[in-house]
Image (tube, rainbow, N blue to C red; front, top):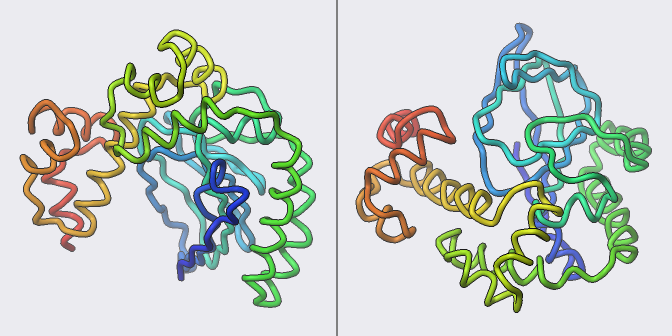
Length: 256
C-alpha cells in the first residue's frame, strides 16, 4: 500500500516528495531489498522492528533513521506489519536543512529534534489518519526550511542534474549554477558528501532502473544512448556497480 504526497512549493528545492507505505512481512522474518538512487531518505516506521544488512553488518534501526546515498543494495528485515512514512530529499540539501554534518552515505542513525515527531505520528498512524500524519511532517519541514541560508548555487546545480537525468557534464552543471567547477565541487562535497559526478551517476542509474521496472523489454542500447552512456557496455558496468546484477538479469526479474 504505497502512497506519495506532493511536496509544497516552498519545499520543492529541498524535498522531492513525502510517502507512506505499509508492508506485510508475515509471521516469519523476511527481507526487502532497496537499490540505490539519487535521493536521501528520512524514514519513520511503526509496528514491528526494523533491521538492516549493510556492508555485511546487521543492525537494528531506531525510528527515525536516514538512508543517505547508497553505492550498493541494502536489505531491510522485519516481520508482521510495518508502516512507514518517508521524506525523499535531494542529497545536496538534506544535511544543511537538518543542520547535520555531511559526508555520510549508507544507512545511519542520527540525533536530531525531528525524532520528537515519532510519538504523534504513531498516534495518527494507529488511527488510520495517514494524510494528517504527512501534513504534520510537512509542517515541521516548512518551519525548518525558513531557517536555512541561501544555497541557490546548489539548488541550480541540482535542478540541472535532475532535468538532464544525470547526463550533463560537470562543466555544464557549473555553468548552470553560475559557478566555477572547482567552487561547485567543493560546495557539493561539503553539502552531500559526494562529488557532482558521483551523484550524476546515481541519478542516471536510477533512470535505467525505473525504465526497466516499467518496461523490462526496453532496448538497452537505446537506453544507453538516451541517457548519455558511452555505449551499452558502459551502461552494463555502471548498472552492475550499483545493483549487483546486470540490466538484463534485473529486467528478467522485473518481468516476474
